[in-house]
Amino acid sequence: MSQSSQHWIATAGQPLRGSVEIPGDKSVSHRSVMLAALADGVSTVDGFLEGEDTRATASIFSQLGVRIETPSPSRRIVHGVGVDGLQAPSAALDCGNAGTGMRLLAGLLAAQPFDSVLVGDASLSGRPMRRVTGPLEQMGARIGTDADGTPPLRIHGGQALAGIDFASPVASAQVKSAVLLAGLYAQGHTSVTEPHPTRDYTERMLSAFGVDIEFSPGYARLRGGQRLRATDIAVPADFSSAAFFLVAASIVPGSELRLRAVGLNPRRTGLLHALRLMGADICEENPSTHGGEPVADLVVRHAPLRGIQVPEALVPDMIDEFPALFVAAACAEGPTVVTGAAELRVKESDRLAAMATGLRTLGLQVDETPDGATIHPGQMHGGSIQTHHDHRISMAFVVAGQRASGQVQVNDVANVATSFPGFDRLARESGFGLEDLAG
Ligand code: S3P
View (cartoon, rainbow, N blue to C red):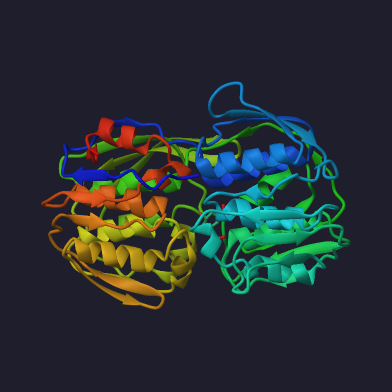
């Protein structure tokens, strides 16, 4: 669980140079442990993200009776127990900061013969869960939430689930995945149709574990009662973590950074398109596939950016990258307009409000709307930033500090360890101005 007593001072540093190895993908890491635990046989996961979120998911499966070895950092050997082999936990299951952990587990645990309780940290405890409990209840699950639909989730096991055809009102991979995981245990078929395609890691990985699943962008369908066959998973580097370095090298004059073997699943790379529309200089080199996912080195050089209207169609493909995009926009020529992004209000923090407030603290004008913002660029000065328990707000303002005229104090940054342990070391090695606040 994150401590909230660590603060950073970010200041303009050197031009960013060198080659950076970004840690494993958070979405893929969560799912790798979940599906390996449900499989028959032993699976090895390589490139597992040693972040607090994904480690929380792994320890939950240990509490559910799954033996998981860590022979070396970023490697897990998961002794699958089969779809019917999980055991009742003896205590509440703590998902930490992880919406992905909690929402996917809700689907999985709703189908088990035992009761369970899912809890989270302050940020997760305020996030909406009806988007998953609603469809799961339609399938026959019984899940209690707090009155406003927030955690803890009290899951009453032993319910017989029936498959549904679920037209999701929200473009959310977490919702889709929760329904599909419950669907594995349901009578008949379960399908999910999305208003806009979202990341399809659950579908791809279920297929890699031998599940017969039909899927295409925005749609997935599977039959209940199938078993999973153990397989080895290679986790690609997380594009969402790479995003902070992409923006930083784009906005710091003289920079040239190579980000090695970054996962480029098309449902994740909206920021790449947006930055290129803004004039960024980013090349893909050494393309290959890693664990079935497209990867390439991203070579990014400083370039003058111009403000854009972010195409709404890109929003789901860059849903985690708006904090980084706001900083790029702050350093561009002309305003950047974001619309159709109301989902940002229910992430680890209200990211529209957190970014708008933080950039205003640094002297910029940001006009907030219910589903977006207009960022008016300018010279940022120093200031003290609240990060609202949100790792990506913390990292975004470290990047902002690289172009500020004064010191940017980024408060309560322990949350960065949820998704990007070692961010500060990699940032300093690349040339960022970044120090721990003494005391
Ligand atoms: C994720 C899906 C997205 C994303 C989150 C990870 C996943 O959330 O923001 O960081 O791994 O499925 P939503 O499903 O709420 O859009």
